[in-house]
Length: 483
Image 1 (cartoon, rainbow, N blue to C red):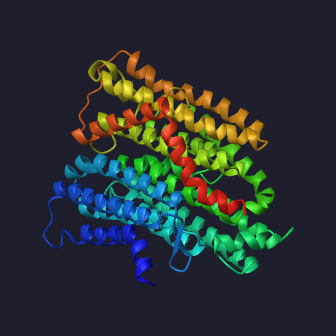
Image 2: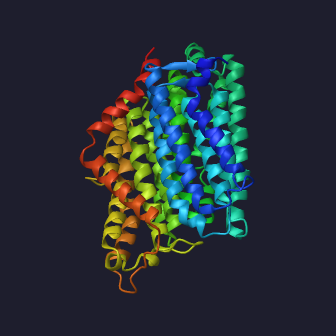
Image 3: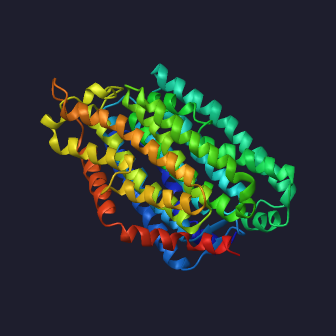
């Protein structure tokens, strides 16, 4: 390791040190939960500054740690998105932790370590460096899912997540070992060259399928989705927002880099399976969500369906497909966090505010927030002029251009189905009679709702800058895939 390597690792180093400081703060006398969020925001600000500084210094794609790690536009796009998501989740958690019985310092420390893992994942160009980052994210997520230590269903959610997540990690690691045995390397560029000369290698195909299965678990795609409803329901609401956005976005970042950079030369061997997984995710996720009365479970099944939509961009193996993945991850993050913030807006403690009935009459007591919820749901459904429409447009166009028009048809039909269950909340807010919902959340939660509302509308009405940014960010991977 050289000084140049340390310079390119500066954001991750800042987060690692910041996470350790947050973890040790109670021992050093910082027992006030109220200031933990402020210290966390300072760490995130430092990480943002370091990321921008490193990106500006790198200029062109630059390898570090002996080509285990790269600083390129793709990595920087996702790193900045991760920081924004974690910052919003941290603000959502502020009052939730201040009023609770659990330590805020430990909570934010785990969030910081998870972010550090995601940053490594975004820059990883070697399957081992990607795996190490993924496991740091996963271990932090298991603990965060069970943060309500004295609540049975929170503990149950953490155990299910841990057991199934550990199995998926083992499956993924075994797949990597098979790929290494066949290709002689775990570096994505070397794998790409090696597989281009191989035909009908059973060990390689099995390795790719096992690797894909592990990644499908991380993005909650069918049939690896069974953990999602229980974990999303049992985890504290801010952590559910984290799992459904940051964790999923990070998993899709490595999904795209691995398959576009390392495995594009054998796409004919795995694309039919990914197509089936995408179709099943869209169908099962949307149809299962129809029957749910618990908002968290409904959004969990919706998250499964959105994984199916995003897989269209992976399947397409084209520039517009990869661009669609980046755009969709960003717009999905804002709409989804806004939706979870609305759940918290109704009640800030424990598990209240989860039922569809809790939204009854919201337009009477909080018309702005009722409107915001409608916008978020329209974006998740892909209805213009929201940002969700732009994301789905790119993904559906990529699927059609790649010869998967039948998948695009399924995606459109399932998007129409999603409007049905999303609008159950709209009906509750605007048409149901009853006691008006009480808005009791903090200024931070209200702020996040407004920020997500503005982002969802602005990115939907004026998407040109986002489209150009995504196009610039994918250029390094597109160039590698075209060699």
